[in-house]
Length: 194
Image (tube, rainbow, N blue to C red; front, side, top):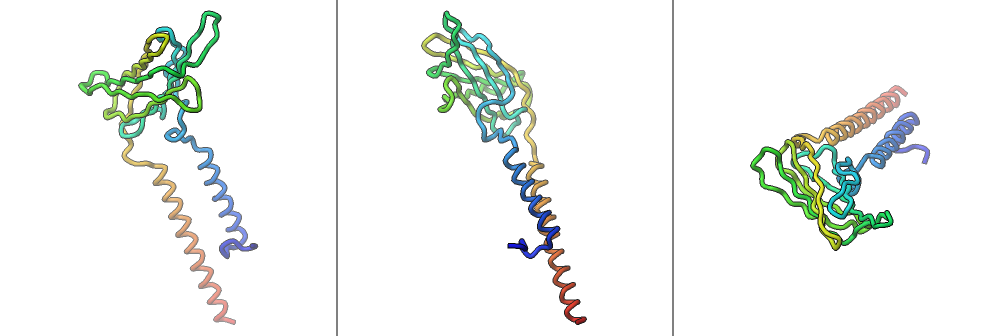
């Protein structure tokens, strides 16, 4: 197939380059809303009763009206200094807005099926501002907690990436049809002269 969509060769190359660029952006774009685990470190190897606690939040920063995700790792250090992931704990995140009358929110974390000792919780925060997040852990070895604070930003009214992508798409479609119209009229004018 030497002629893609009946486009001249320079346009074919440009179209291929655009398609490859769009594919690369889609594949390499961080999928913070889809990819669980990881994020901005909030608690790193902190003692929580008999446990050691790690916590990450994503996306960074949290925004009102969008999903807030917390990943928690719980480990236990034995007398020999061996670190063991704890997979049978109950992990809960209790969130409260600093200086606001907003009721406490409670996100129950579920164990990550693919990573031992990791737990994940999701929820939405209703108001912007400073929020206190307390991670409560309880299990066979005892109970403990860890705390971090984070600033929740107001939700974005517009998704600029969607608008930019749609605008580029419209420009490409209009450009293609303008080029086709010009080519057809140029060819018909040449045929009338001949």
